Image (cartoon, rainbow, N blue to C red; front, side, top):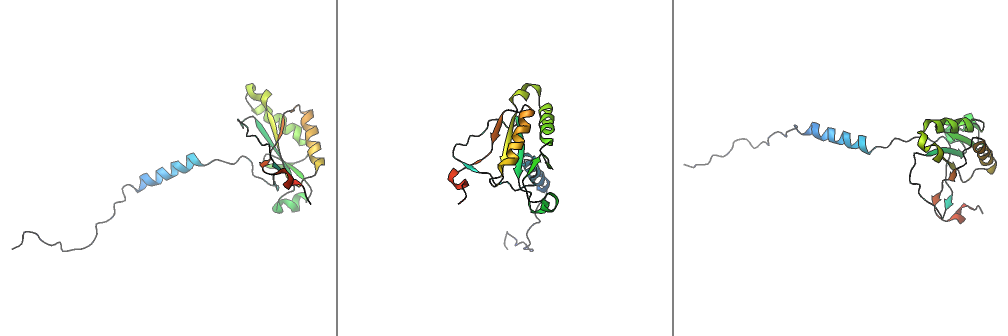
Length: 161
């Protein structure tokens, strides 16, 4: 006569799924908090030139971005293969730069409008003519604080052989 009885079934108990909704919501909140929405979708080729004296800006809410470069492959049928200007999500003409800058300036809070800066992201293979035209339009729009975005590296790599 034994005191212990052997269990008859060797099946494992069912896995509890009670904590599954908690895990799903925790992952959902993590991705909602960690995800950063991209402001502008690039429609141009934009390989930034190298520079050896690069400084990181402390605040990006005062910046307006203007992209210059050749249209990417999917937009070359529409815009050709010459250098174009992208303002926000739209490929634009030089004449639209002044209106774009003034609109963006007016959208900023009044206390930082004087500190507004235009960041030019110019493709390393772009021609200087388009850049000069954009700078002239910025001058007429009284957007006199300009910076050029570059990546940290050897500037001699920009020189084509």
